[in-house]
Image 1 (spheres, one colour):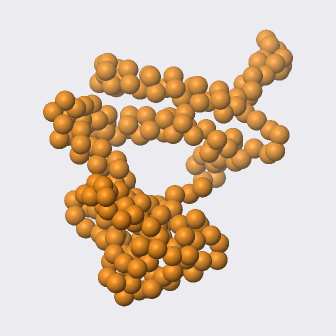
Image 2: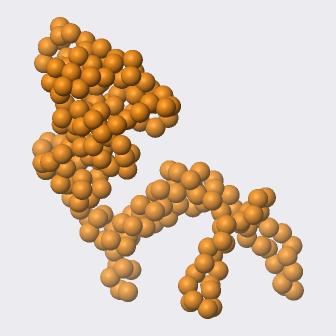
Image 3: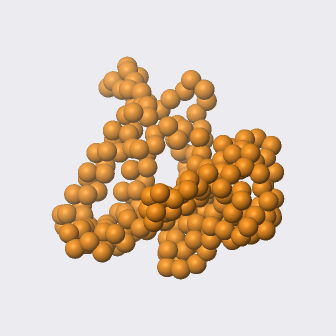
Length: 224
């Protein structure tokens, strides 16, 4: 189930209030309903808030509702309605960094905490080394993505298009798969080795190791 940002906002606010006062009143959906009306002059029933927070179908999310949440929680409307927007903040360093890099709030906070802590600050140098080489870093991330999310990839065949001079990727038909073909001396097929997602994930893990070795021993890269 996708994350529910309406629920996330209320629960995060509840956590902040408990941190300030462990004995404070629970920040329930009913409490949020009352405070939205008192502070933003917008009425939404606690039952509708519950539907919002449980992704109930058919719930109308109008401009007035989004504006009330924006003003009450100090978040951007884009973040509320678009799961691809990674930062909830309207402005400030985190908002600028997120817009520039595409990193989420949590990722930016993690980097910030690493930098602030003397016992972990040095680890950022490793991140700098990895990211300063765009080609190697791109290859590293691509292989990590396949290793961690093989189910999001579908098999296909890449062929050269002589007309356009570009490589064209065509998906395989149902039941087909990629495979290596074993040939005899007469170039006849005598066996096959099917390539599935697990095979490719294992290959990606080996490739990740090879890329990291190139970072550590860059002699080959420097000679090219």
